[in-house]
Picture 1: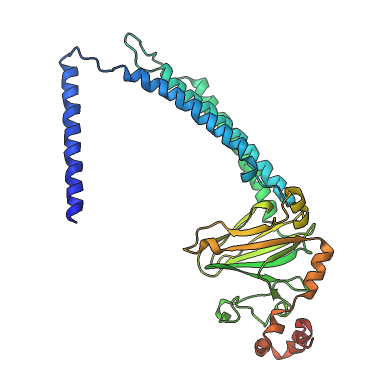
Picture 2: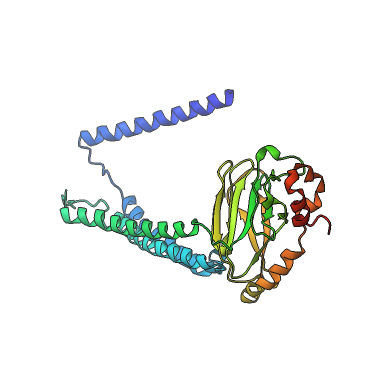
Length: 344
């Protein structure tokens, strides 16, 4: 606490000295002192403004082109083409406006620097300019918002009936991944049923749960619609697959969803990227705690035939945990045994 008071005292002394300096300068101006109020440093600062402008935009242009592939990965889903089109349309419009306004900002700082015997022009108002810089942004932004809303509505609309259903649940610090099984329907859940084994709270009064299975990674079929049913158990997470142009928050107590169609297999991407170790990935795009970095999963995209074979080889969660048959209603036990493949 003593150190804090010392720092505060130093700050106050410096503030008082600065105020004394400012007051003395103002008094000299009022008295009509011959001392120039603006020195040669004014021209130096104006020139440095232009130098900064050139260096800043030069560095920005170099970095943008030199590292373009690092922040613009190849698109691997159908809707990604729409998303990228919207992104680059917005980027071009806002980028051009950004460049023009900042050129004017720094050039005007140079052109209209203080010079003796130079009078500023009084220009209080112009109706045409007011209409121009109000109307044009309003029209352009309306166009961007409407086109973006149309794309968003399509992405979050009801998925096709034959979509592969996969549930992704975020928790600190992992993803819990559940597939809809052979009936292609993810079963219901109830948070009150969560325990050390049934960490998703699968409700076995719902027969859709009987053939559901879990997996540590995400496997997807090329060319088929995939519906991700997204939720969180604790804090806010965010499902992010950059190559799929897929990002959707996982919110506790508020399930969300996102459907898309992968259009490139992992093998095809390895050839395209000339990288035999390439893998799609799922990451958490929301800083959710100290081990946020650990929320990464491999995403594998297979040809439809390979995917069907892989899916058929998976064992249901219920067959691996037959003790939970006690939670199945009596009238559904026979169906559960057959569907879950418990006798296999």
